Image 1 (spheres, rainbow, N blue to C red):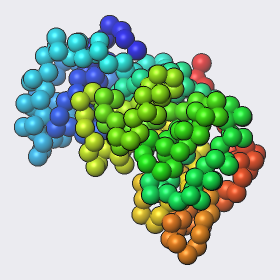
Image 2 (image 1 turned 120 degrees about the vertical axis):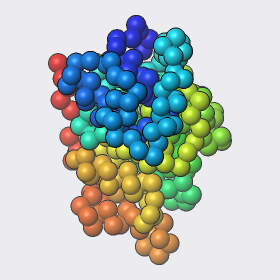
Image 3 (image 1 turned 90 degrees about the vertical axis):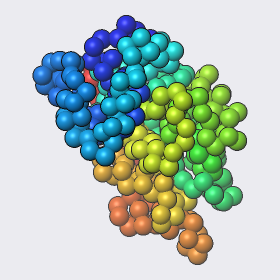
Image 4 (image 1 turned 180 degrees about the vertical axis):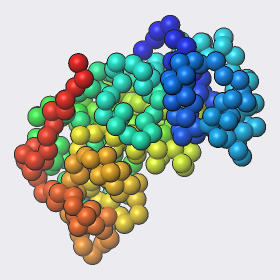
Length: 297
């Protein structure tokens, strides 16, 4: 969404580009800016508001390098929305620390579709998971669901691919800038989704894959989706983190049971014990979850 930047949006965008500050610090600055109705802060004031300690020098150096002219140029060259925009999903605003800026390529309207389903699972998924994905998705696509996943290997990529093959629409949430494709073998579907579906990230162009970005990516999947389906999650996995976050956000979680001997679905079985719905067919999800979220006028 290209626009003339308001002072508040410019502050959010500049913080998104800046190094040495995390999501909590950015949220503190934004909250104070709204409370005081100003965006005019010195570097020292920003550090104090964000409560920066170890990363203070990194932040100060980065903030000083980001000139107004360069920030404006970056804003023109990469589509994004902020938490202040009407198109920003209300679902994400319910999170404790929502992404203040979302960079995107593709169909932005999919973010506010009536029916968003997260599909997550193992990267090293088995043929069983592949069959489950291709069994569960067609009825959900026929019911006009948009499938949200993370473009990772295994269940994520299969979910995107099966949705596209079935004539549906899908959203990919990634943990890099939109100029990076990770993993590389996802490039064909990554390119297809940027043209005809939607890929989003809270990281600007030029951001490479970093380990801590992917749990952050998972929280966006969990927050964006009306319900999350988990297929082949081990006891410790990113998919399990996504499901647990979804539960914390009050989303419906559906876990597909698997082989009790392999350990490949141990996380799914634990989710079921913790209150997730044991999902054996798509009708269960369509019957039980309330898809039509109330939208702000």
